[in-house]
Amino acid sequence: MDNKVKTPLWSKNAQKKMIDEDMSKLDLAKSLKVNYTQMISVLSGKTINPTMQERICTFLNIEM
Figure: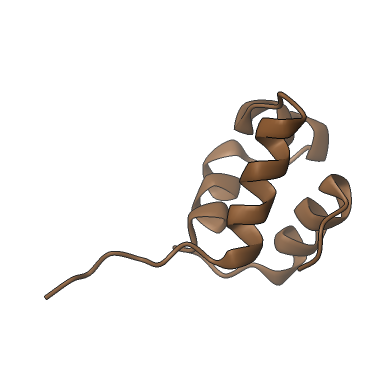
């Protein structure tokens, strides 16, 4: 069985925007003043955290 977590569309869009802005995940975590490990878990889709998702999307100016 495949236990791989599917990356959410909003996360793919966030990561594309970060590439366009030449921003690392560490830069994003520092800008948002959030825990890097927790943010990575949310970006990967392993953890559902609507508050952090909203903060990431708002900061990057993308749709959730």
